[in-house]
Image (tube, rainbow, N blue to C red; front, side, top):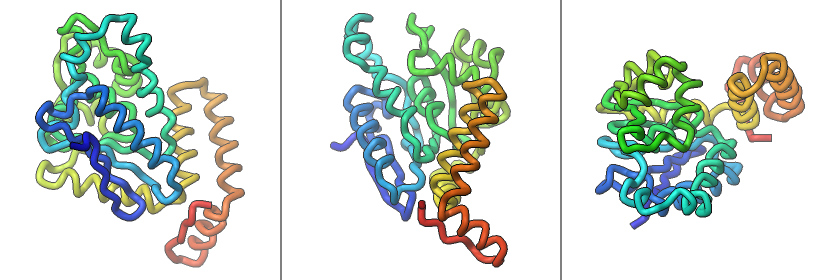
Length: 255
C-alpha cells in the first residue's frame, strides 16, 4: 500500500499521508516516500502549489515510537535521518499543510516545515517528546519558538500541553481555522488561489518572508529588493502589470 497518495487538481497537487492504522506516524518508509514525492513535484514546472494533508482524525500523530526506540543515538546519526527533513527545506514550490485532528511531535514539526498551515477546527497541536525522555529533533524547538514565541514554545514543549486550532491561530502558528465539515475543500480553495499567482513571484515572496526570521533586517531588505528586481525581469511581471492596466485577469505562464 502506498504510504503517500497524490491527487492532481490543475496546478495544485494534494499529497496525502496514508498510514491510517498508525495515525500517520512518520516511519522511515513514509518519510522516504514523502520526500521523494515532494522533490519530484518541486521539479515539475506545471505544479504551482502543493497541499500536504492527512486524514480527518490525524495529520500525523508523531514519529513512529517503536521504530525510534530501536535506534541508538549513533545509529540515528549514521542513518542520516535528518537529511530527509533538510530536503523539506529545499522545496521551493509553495507547500501548504492542511491539518485535521492530531498534529503532534514529528507531525507538528512537519506542519511547521511548510510555508503555511491551515487547520480544521478539530486540529490539535503539540510537542510531547520530553514525556518520552527525548526532545523535538526536527525543528520543533526552533520553528515553534519562531512562529509562536519563546513563552508559548516553552509551555508546549516543557509541559506537553496541546494547543487547539484556535489557540494555534491566535499564537501565529496557524493562518486560518477552517470548518470541520469542509476543511479539505476549503484548504484546496486556498491553494488554488496561491497557484493562480505568478510562480516565480510566489517562490521569491515566500523566501523573502523566511529571511525575516533568519537574517538581520538590512540583509532581509536587500534580499527583498533583489527579488523584486528579478521578478520585474520576467514575462509574468509584464503580463501582470499590463493586465492590471487593461482591467483583466492576468494569464501567468511561469516565465
